[in-house]
Every structure is written in structure tokens, then in C-alpha cells.
Image 1 (spheres, rainbow, N blue to C red):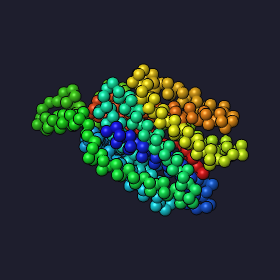
Image 2: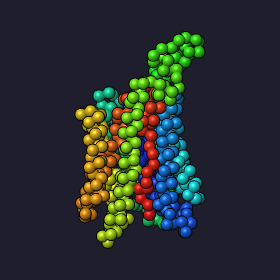
Image 3: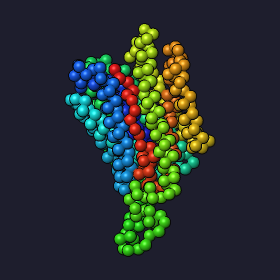
Image 4: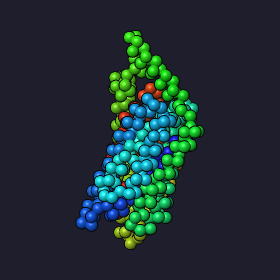
Length: 378
């Protein structure tokens, strides 16, 4: 189960970071020459559309996962983002590119919530933090691989970006393995059976109380009508919103910023931009895993607060105080450990805040992502 979810996140990380790396190059082909000066604005549109699709998919996929199961939803999500990512390679204008990235985002968001739910339901209680950290480390590995692949193929010409998206069809092969090897969540199966029983009782005219009444409700209504769930949902949403704005508004600018810094010093901007990407994504792998282990060791809340605080402290270090390339790259490395790793708190802690009957629905509602700014615009 963990291997399948981790591989799913590896491909998610690859495809998201591939967009960061290639959106500027893609728009050089998809826009008229007279529009080149506006590439940063169009890149913002594409990224915003992608993340809106991610948020949409998380909500829709979460609801579907609560009704048809984690395994089947994961398979559908992987197929969706694999096919739409591969189709992005044949985009003919910026609008078609944005639409295909939106659809790919829907699949990625759906995959996120099913993976998080599976880890929370199948991983042992005493080691669930480790499971969540290992799960999310796949995103860091995928981002690191995307940086490496782009270093290899980025110089193949103006259409090199299209090859990055054609690679995106590979996750579809993962569905065959999941279908054969991965078990369904037994906790979901029990909740689904209880839901069917509660609805059958309601149809027969029986009066339902407490959890039986909740099981008969649509999961979205259940989430907002249950006071204990609602009380947790609002602060969880605000926490995730802060991470989202911080990451998309600050951390995704690192490769572009390092490239600009290098150019001012007479160094190669593309080279140092790629190096910054490799360093930041490489250490993020360990940031994910470390957060998971710390969450089991000292607790969910203190671990999350440490990662939040370090992101806040390191932002001015990277963007204001680093005055040499060596110091900047060192700061970027530490920065990537925390700004990448902080995402792992969501699959570790969020599902534990909500009942199994609404794991899929509540987790993305608390962690809906919103778009920010382009990571690397050329």
C-alpha cells in the first residue's frame, strides 16, 4: 500500500515540478512573439488553473473515495492525471495547455486525498506519522527526478518541454499493479457497510440517532452539521491555507530568484537555477520523512509548529540576507528541507481529526490548495 501511494506521489511531484520548470518554455511556443513580454502573466494563469484543478479534484475525489472506496478512486485518479498530462504535450495554444493542466490537477488532487486516507487507515497507529512522511517523500523524489530529467533534455530544442509531459503517461502503468496488489482499506469497508445499513434503516422508517444518523447523511452535510468536526475543520483549513500561500507565493520563486542572482554576478542563470531546484527538492525528501518521524516522537502539534516557524525564519535569510552564491545555495538547501517537508503534516495529522466515514471528504476541505505565483518563468 505504502509503495503504491509513494509511487503515485512520485509521479505527482514529477508532473507538478515539470510544470514549474517548463511553463516558460511552453509559453514561448504557445504564444505569439508579440506576447512574450506577458509570459509571466500567462504563466500565472496556467499555474493558477492547475492548482484550482488540484483543489477541485481533492474535494470531488474525497467525496467519491468515501462512497466507492480508496482503491478504486486512486486508480481512476492516476489514469486521469496520466492521460491529461500526456495530452498536454500536444497543446496548440495557451488555453488548451491551461485546460489540460486543470484536468491533470483534478486527477492529482483526487490522488492526494485517497493516498492520505489509505495511510491513515492502513498504517499502524504507533507509526502513522512515519507512514505519512514516507508517503509524501515520493513528491520530493518526483520533483528531484523532474529537475534531473530537465537537465538532460532541456537542451534538445524549443519542443523539449513536450517530452516532459509525454513521460507523464507512465503512471498509468501503476494502475495495473494497484488493481492486482493493493488491498482496500478495511476501515473504509466497515464504514461503508455501516452506511448502507443506516440508509436501509432510514428507508424502512426507523428513527436513527447519533452516528447512525450521521452515516445516513451526505458526507458534506455531515461534515458541517457535526459540531465537533466543524470545530476542527476551520483551524485545519486556515493552517493549510497559510502553507499554501507561503509555498506558492514564496518557495516556488527560489529557482527563478537564484537564476537572477547568478546572472547579476556574471554566472550562468540556467545552471544555478537548476542547481537550486535539485538542492531544494532533494532535501525536501528528507524534510517529509523527518516530519513524519518527529510527529510520532514528539507529537503532531509541536512538530508542525517547528516546521512552520523554520519556514518563517528562513524566508528572509534566502531572499534578503544571503549575499554570496555559496551562502544562498546553503540557505536554499535548509529552506527546501522545511518548505517542502511541511506538506507532510497534512496526511499525518489531518485524517486523524475526522471520523473514517468522512476521511475523504473532510481532509481535502481542510487542505484545499490555492494558486500563487509561477515558480520559474523564462
